Image (tube, rainbow, N blue to C red; front, side, top):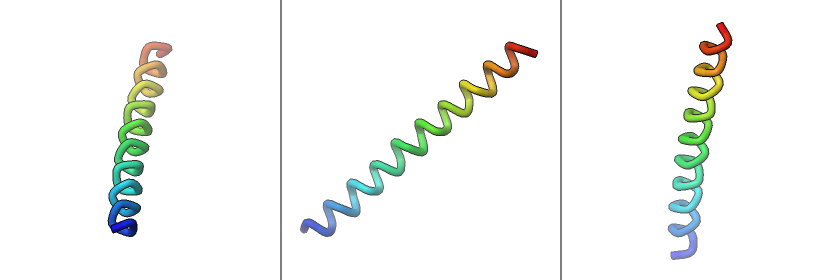
Length: 36
């Protein structure tokens, strides 16, 4: 049970981190585009 919960939490954490990195990357490229 605890092991399963750990797996789910790590999976959710990775998805959130991935989403944040992707959004942040879009924001950075958008800002670079504005500067150009």
